[in-house]
Each structure stands twice: as C-alpha cells, then as structure tokens.
Image 1 (cartoon, rainbow, N blue to C red):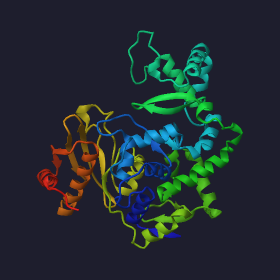
Image 2: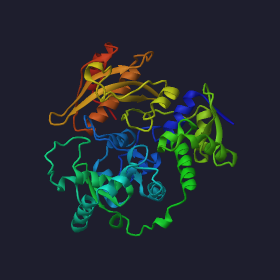
Image 3: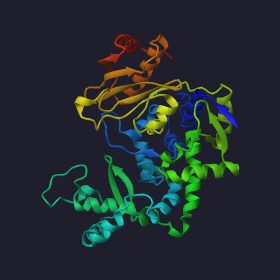
Length: 408
C-alpha cells in the first residue's frame, strides 16, 4: 500500500487537476477542451464580479486564453450541458453515462416529469416554437403574466425549457451572451439512440473510477461529491474496485480512512510519495473550482476553512462577497475579494487575507504579484489596486511589487 504525506497528497491532487506548473506557451483552443476532459466536469455559475466561474477555472490552469473558445466547443458539440457536480459543461464522450441517469431519473430535477405532464398545453406550445425556429432562447418568449422576473420566478416558457432540458428532450446547442440557446436533442445529437445508454451499474463504476482519477488520490468520503453520486454506494464500490485491481489502495498521513489511486496516476503518485512531485503554481481559484468546491475536503487536506459569502448578508461577511482562494506552491495560503472594473481598466482587490501562520516573505509577495498581474491582464484591467490586506504590511509591499515591470 502506498503511503503519502498530507503534502504529497496535495501535490498529487493538484497534478491530476493540471495545476503543477504554469504553462510555458500560449494556450490554444484544444487546451481548453483538454483541461475540461482532464477535470471531467466544469461547473457553471453566473456570478461575474470577475470572470464567470467556468472561464476562471480554465484560466487558473491555462493562463491567458480566449474565453470564446469554451463557447465554441459547446457550439461544436464537443461539450454538452447537464447536471453533474452541479449544472456543468461535460465532455460529449460522457453523454451516454448521463443519458442513463436522465432515463432513470437519477439526475436533473425529480419534479420535471410531473411538471411536464401537468403543463401539457404550455409544453406543446414551447415545443412547437422550438420546432418552427430550430433553436430558441428564453428571451424569445414575452412574459404575459405581469409578474416580475427573478432568479426562480421564471415565466412558464422558461420553466418548460428547463424541464425539457432536464429530461433530455432539449439540449443546449450554444450560449449567446451566456444565455442558453435550446434545441431538440435530435438536432444536436442526430445519431443518438437511447439503446446505447449503459446500465446504471456500469455508469456508477465509470464515474467512480473517473472521480478517483480526477482527484489524484481520494477517500471514500471525497469520491461521491465529485460527480454527485449516491454516498451510500461509494465505499462498497471503491472496495470492490480495489479488490479487483482497478484502483490502487493508499493511505494519507493523518487520515484514518483508506484512500485510492487510479492506475493512470501511478507514476505521479510514486513521484509524490518520493517527494519529487511539487506544485510550483501560484494562482487564484474560483469558489467552484474542483480543488475547493468540496469545502470539507479542502479543510481535511489543505487545512483551509472556506465558504463563499455571496449568500451571506453583507453585515455578516468576514472576507467578502466572492472571495477567491489563493493557491501557492501546493498550499492554500489565503483568499482575496476582487472586482474587475472593465470599463476603467482597473482590477480592485478589496481585501486580501493570508491564512494564519503564512510567512510574509519576498518570495510570497513576488508570487502573489505575478498571479494578480496575470489575472488582471487577462481581464483587460491592467491597473491593480490593493485596498486592504491582512496582515496590513502586505498591502504596501504587494503594491510596490506590482509597480515593478516583470522581466523575461
């Protein structure tokens, strides 16, 4: 059984996620798809105080790239949208797995079939419009009930579109200004036959193996969260896969529960165990990045107690509305509350908090300045302004480092 220190496990997870070192060349459109395939899932979120989450997750791994490339992959059919960890972009090769979950009513909204059956006339009208137009947006339907729009106060046509998406009758053909454009499944995947959907047991096996591979190393508690599989099925499945040799047993120092490694990551795991695999990346992470979206795992593995506070009343926030975790050289060392003012070309750091015990060194300041400079440049907001930091001495040193023109 392979034994890994906590730091070795962190480095293995980051290597599996493509966060071992900064890219040495400019990203390409193919790199965007490869990064999503490597992660297995790219969670969607609409908050855009900086780049929306799926685009930021890719930037953390690829550096500067054209966000339109993600949209282009969706429109080209290399990706599809459905529920996984949450609403997500997913590699099209995994469609058969998720189609089985749709057919078995194990993913998506459980109420969708009932809602569609209870609103037959509205559904028929929406489907007729989709058939006539080929594709539709929610915005193509005028609201007629007099109610105000809101996050969940959807007009009936929007509800119909979303429920039809949940049961798989419609798919997202593309996004337009980040708004979904819906089309019939037959138009997006004309060759698909539901007979090709594997049995549920095969789906669970495939997703369990994929989750372990994407995490680098995983315990039974971490695995089901990745693709939101049933927790009760996780431990027996992992034990069975290890017994047959499909997974490698491992142990993480300080954790009582057994861990597992996918054979595809064996060489990385051996390097991590030998102390020769190290993440040298310093970057900013989305709150919905796979590295931190499981808050309990982030605490257990990285000793990083994190929550997103955008749903917390402003007076009760400790760190800020949309704080981004700071990854530095294999550790989560702090968080910052940013705002990209695109029209003014200014990237504002409202607050930056280092974790207790993180030493304020010249190397740390330089790494932080580099990460902020790269993120701001990608947002086309090259002027970085630091408002407040903890410790306070970091603000002046970081602002001074940002004023220095980088070489090389």
